[in-house]
Length: 202
Image 1 (cartoon, rainbow, N blue to C red):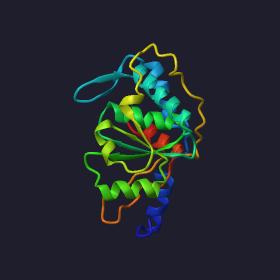
Image 2: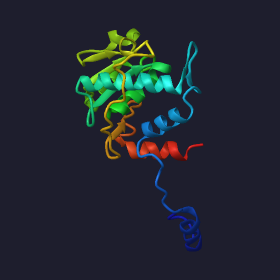
Image 3: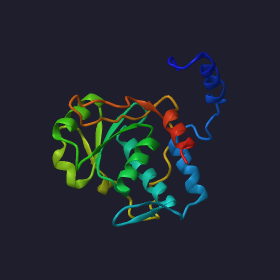
């Protein structure tokens, strides 16, 4: 705006800044849960091998969140996801958010050992949610294998929705790049910001 003429700045301020609108959902997993109730049997995610409906994805995420809570993972905690693009990655993200923690996503097929070690230490991750194929890459940080936490039975009785402890000021995720300086791009982006982003996207 500093390079605009005065009249242009006035026009920009008048037409470019709309009225603040409160999002329908405070946290992104609330929006997901709402959509899962509205369209339970619509496919939510598809990878090269499988498809999963919203209701099943919600159940799997609840199961993981319950498991994470049993290990002391909740608001204020950070969980590294050492995964690849897949249904399990989405289950991991939702499970961490439902537990109230922040996720630190890393692609196990791409991330260098130096970046992985730095991200684990710098983010203060207390747990690594990892695919079995990447377990050998994790050092001393406690791990939880994603494949071992998934409830195969749709009638499992211990996968109820955990108590929702997340607030709009809690961190939602932290992202690292693999550049020279191992840069943290979005330090502690809160649930509210993430929810707003998903709300205005088409």
